[in-house]
Each structure stands twice: as structure tokens, then as C-alpha cells.
Length: 175
Image (cartoon, rainbow, N blue to C red; front, side, top):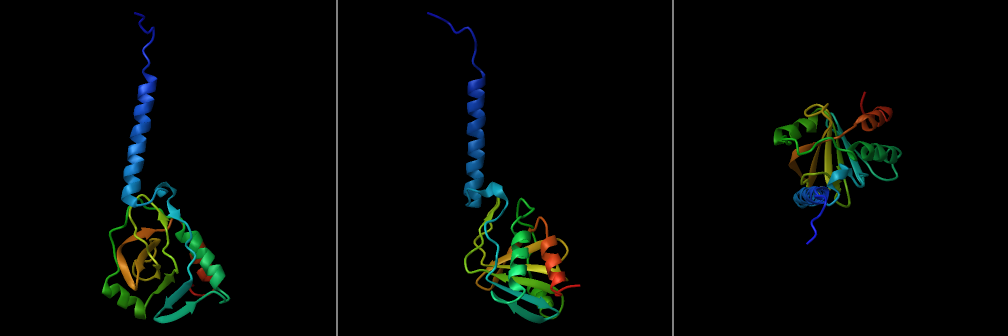
């Protein structure tokens, strides 16, 4: 009987490491309901309709409007990359929504198809987003998700809101 001259430790360790990584990846993917959760962004965040609420005045922008394409691209650039690893524990109360009916500035973004966010947590299939620009919850790069006229609990954070704010200033919607 011939005995091995060397103990092979690297192969089992490598196999254990690969199996462990695979298990962690699969658990996060099943929880997030997304196999591409590690990308941390949205596939296409270009809205089909944009509503700007400024001090209670509602302005609706749709394709064909002069500012729609520019603002749509700015929204996609800002909302397309997120900077959080779980939902932020805040929501939009009835009081906050009533505040924005008369004061502050916000964007309501509406989509024909649900926005697919690739993140390591469950975000649902939102067809509308709300971004506070001035007033309550503003200044933290938060945006809120929703569908069918309802806003869901838990905010997400844009990694870089500069394109959105710059475009809103250029178009004269904020100072």
C-alpha cells in the first residue's frame, strides 16, 4: 500500500470557501428576489410621467415636453444608483403628504412598468417614486417607492443626487 507523500489541504479549503460563498449568495438572492442583487442600482429608472409639486402647484411633464427628456435622464442618473444596504426606517405619513400639498417641493415619478432595483434587500415592484426636494425628508437623498397610488414604508437613498438637483436648477424649478 502506497501512502501519499503530501497532505492536500488546499483543495478542500477552496471547495469549502466556494460552497460558503455560493450559499451566502443564494440566501441573499432568495431574500431579495433578485439574482443580480450585487449591482446596487436600477435597470431603467426613466419615468413615463413626471409631476413636480412646488408650493402646492402641480406641473406634469410627459414625453414631448421641452424639459421631459433632460429631467428623465437626470432622474435615471440619480435614482439608478442607490447607497443603502437596507430600507431606511421612515415613511410618508398623511401629515407629510398634506404638507407637500401646500409647501415644499417634490417630484412624483410614474412608470409604465415596475422599476427593477438590484439591491440585497426586498423592495417590491414599485411603479411610482417620490423624491422630496425641499421640505420634509429633503436633503438626505431619500426617495420613496409605491404603486397604485399608495406610498410604501421605507425609504431608499440615492448615491448621487447632483444630476437631479442640477437639472432642476437649470430648468428653473428650484433655486
